[in-house]
Length: 493
Image (tube, rainbow, N blue to C red; front, side, top):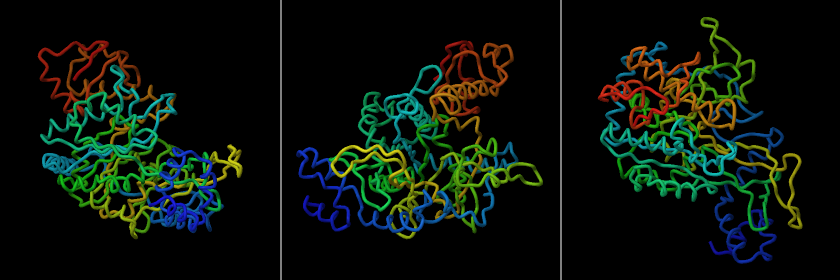
């Protein structure tokens, strides 16, 4: 759009203040501002102003669309715990799990599956300067999160005999650094043409009257559009069309902060395909009532996720009379499978599309003279999409249980729970369980010197190229002739 037409469109939409310092900017500043303005869908913003800034403006949060979510306006009526497929060790049907694994393996051998990582964050909360995916996380070699995932995908390629595509959603903030990191590390052995980086979308921040805020004379206050924006980004980037050309119909979705995730899980894929699901999810039984996980629930026949902050404490603490377990115990850990055409439908902007959530924030901006303002209280609104809001629209959604010890140890905080230290410890405990499950005699295991929590007192590491689970570890260990001694510094690949 020509410059004058873009500015006229903003003025016609009541957003002319975006360009109030335009005449004072140099050419580079004007180009920056115009490029940002061109990202904004003024019609969408007007709809959000009418809905999220209207009746629910006092609520602090709100949303447009189906399902349960978001703040004081959340609909909690008719909520029931969602059913899920328990693991065989917790009463699940072992034959069904075996059939699911077989179906998933067949899909992988047919090349129907790709991986998708949401990786727009920075390592700021970890005291790390760089994209979060570049953060070192393994206990011995200090491999980055991206390298761990790459090795898991390489292992799956070797196991199933088909190359895999890997889609990675970055952000405006970290895209260039992420691309450089992969190039510097030769894509960790993956084919570069099968690693696809694309940027997450952004939304402008607005004041409580819906006027777009500036953070500098030449910059609009913009923020990422939430993990739900991943669906729109897949469409805009051309990823869905590439998948269609390659015969890929299933996308394995996971977030960048959890190195223990099964990026490619044949049993999960099999459940998804055998049930004809458009969107499937993994759950964990909550460790305690106050654990900060979203809750899988049923609401009038539809699967929804209700955030931990939205479910009243009394409901979180409800227990089943028969078992004494938490009623709402199915916790969401942001691991999903997505059908390609479902993503296309959800990103088309029709009746079936994600609704935005509103979050009131303190947003640095400018006064009328262009001087910086640091507000002491919330002065505006950011808009976000949540990926789990797609669940109510999905046909035949499936939720399966996974093992906390084997698949969930996110790196979110610098210290304490969900920190690099706790994650490395969880990886070490997993390796120790694999050694024990391989049937090694007690004397051979003694150097692990496990403490009461099962944590080895020596440093070791098992690459995903050596094993992805206890069964593959036993298989790989049996092939070692002779096997190395278990000692501090042991690395298996």
